[in-house]
Length: 368
Image (tube, one colour):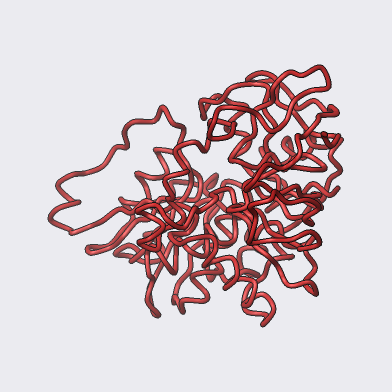
């Protein structure tokens, strides 16, 4: 048996999404069939279109989904039909070396993140004439219905407004966790966040949670009001002049912590340059896979004792961060719904990505 669903497919690099009816196979042993309610419009999916990620086409993307479980395989134990879930694009297995160390965000299954198929190489989804379709990040949630690994399902309390929470699946834990888990920013620190999409604004919130003193938010689009709403004390429009010079104009000797939430080499370099001695830069945005170097002053790195950290999914297992952030959301300690500044139908997905690239939104969401 199969389940038909409308989905947004990428059929070639630098091509628009096409809306097609696809067919999903029934869930196998450890798989779960999910009816999708909403999915975030995130830049990571767009990397598949631009060639920044080496993927095969056709592919259904979308990695920030929420939905309701409809079917489960005969080996599934974590969820049951009727459960409301947030999808995790890293299906932490729980038993590999990294998971056992408490690092489910870098589970060994991540090696197949861009592969788009099951472990045995088969596809869960195909066109009506049998053409296999790749499934980005184990999910492919730009589809009305998906079949995903059980290990990618995080159960949400029934009373929470699930359709308003897709960002719990990626951007909120990625940004908030980069501050509080990876960088471990202490109270009283000065910090810079560059790139004010959903990840960047979540990092700003993370700094507010940590008790940072001066929180400098920077973007090439004027997002001053929104940045202050999420906790920024200062805003820099990079279009007005050099980023480093503007930061030093606020904190003369540099910041203690900096966060690149874009993934560009020039920004990564700037986040290191702007550190005061002993400072730490955390690179949150995913750079194109072909970017192999970043320009740094190696002399300063040693004698000024600067450091750089990479972070994936906020530096903690999604099965740790997501439930914690949901509890904080319930208590009013993090803003989730406010990150969503535009909603689209599936048929408007190309418009949604055009708006994202133009910087019109903090976060856009596809509603099903």
